Length: 514
Image (cartoon, rainbow, N blue to C red):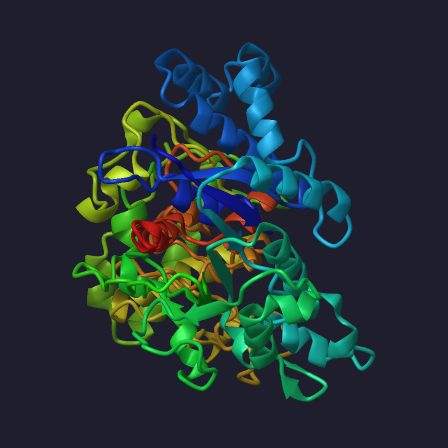
């Protein structure tokens, strides 16, 4: 009888890692992994997790799947959907523990449920997830450096990985996957690197947790072969760094991912295979989505006013690029604004020619969906729209290069104290059409300045759906919460398509491994 591998998903966010594992199938087409529990403390992300869990449980039933589509189209409420399928709804809610739960605070509830799952499951088990990264990220450390009161050793976020160790001691999984930002490699506590301690604790969780009846783990890189992972010095720490753009992700997302394999499993895991069609571009992933206009955050917001304001911006920029000797190149851009653009659009009939490479097309698209979810623009102040238009045009005229602060006309300079110091030279950054994007981060929820759409005739920042596409979330993945919360969820997630490739490595490792 087919036995799915039990997945325990910690610090789950909106479910990027879990989505990749749940989508992985055996050679005969059966589901290889079953998510037993997904733990997340953020209410909006938890709601997204629960909705997605229900979707997976309804997917094989055509009528139920259509009802899910009715929900995301706004034709029925979420409550209606959950009430119509009470059995599946209860299973989905059990999977996410009914309510947001926090590791370290709600351990009684969390550990009890994990013990129940482990005791009732007779097959393989795997723990996945990544402790919150704010304490390790370079941006977070930069903010902390400006706080004279901040002490790394007092920041509990540095030690959330110990909650991961506690779960390892309970579940004793054959395999674990831990993900974090690259900053974890250089983060220090008491002036000493913390990463070696994390590695040592993961190799010997019995010592770290005081649980004696458990085996240790060998820690493997997913991108570098090694014959002796039990040797702490066998690799450079950077060998644990995965460059997602080399594996079909249209984004320069560099993350540390550790593959822990229990020491009684003698088989050596494979590594990720670099894909031939790497370096997939932004335009290939989002160029088929309905065109939208930006909005105004402080003034009357109508299509007519938007066209008038942006037209004036383009005329002003035309004069600037003429002075730069690029009048002919500017005119060839043939920038025409449409009075028909809306700020949101959900009907798939407006989708342009399909550009998504075949590698990702079946993964992302859902031909039954017939809507574009979470695709709505935000409002900006008029002067920022002028800067957005400048950035997009500059990139079109300069081989996709986004301008630095020194490239801006003086009259476009914002009132930022560090604008001319070089410290924030890329305060405004366009995502060039023919390149992969920069890292989609939770900062996209703040203002959009780092995530400007490449099309100056739309003059805006990326929508949640466009960011989700660059993260390789399927189009039918619905993000709950308000727009800011949706951006945070997308920015914090592991790309599901990368997670699926990791899941395939784990599946192959555990198949006939004893």
